[in-house]
Amino acid sequence: MKTAIRYYTKSGNTKKLADAVAQELGIEAEDITAPLEERTDLLFLCNSVYWAGVDGRVKQFIADNKDNIGTLVNVSTSAMTVSTYPQIKKLCGQSGVSVSDEEFHCRGSFKMMHRGKPDSDDIQAVKAFARKVTGDKNE
Ligand SMILES: Cc1cc2nc3c(=O)[nH]c(=O)nc-3n(C[C@H](O)[C@H](O)[C@H](O)COP(=O)(O)O)c2cc1C
Image (cartoon, rainbow, N blue to C red; front, side):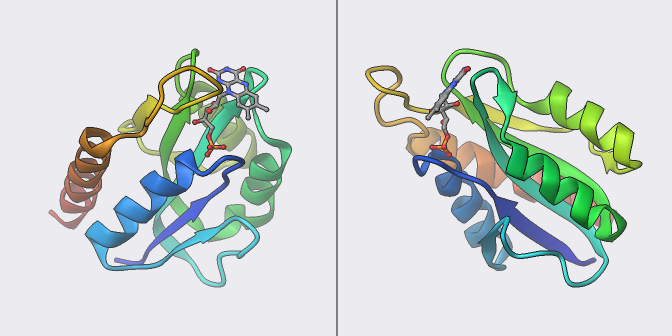
């Protein structure tokens, strides 16, 4: 099974999750400037909420790479709102990309809020999530 990890981060929080998934799966996490060069069964897309939305570069990445995404697994951080899952699911629906029902979300620090998040518990949790999702796919 071909698995890839891409992330978009402004302040580093989401990269922490992407790097944890990478460490768990033994593959590299790259930022979204790296296109998917080949068909990927499972794509962990790590992203965040900015001004209540998904960054335009993340939207563009999905549109540009849609033909190489088997199933997208959403991993996100935010300071206040729910995860980016609903928006990503909608965007993917428009592009014909399948999205896993399983997602990972945790708080990310923003100004004075949620200092230290994602923290070590979040890192362990996202690793367990990555194990579970890839394990389910291999069954
Ligand atoms: C410019 C900006 C706008 C943000 N807007 C929101 C928002 O509307 N809702 C929210 O819950 N968090 C918001 N946040 C907080 C981020 O979602 C949170 O800090 C996230 O962990 C950032 O991830 P990153 O460090 O990978 O960029 C915002 C953060 C930034 C930098």
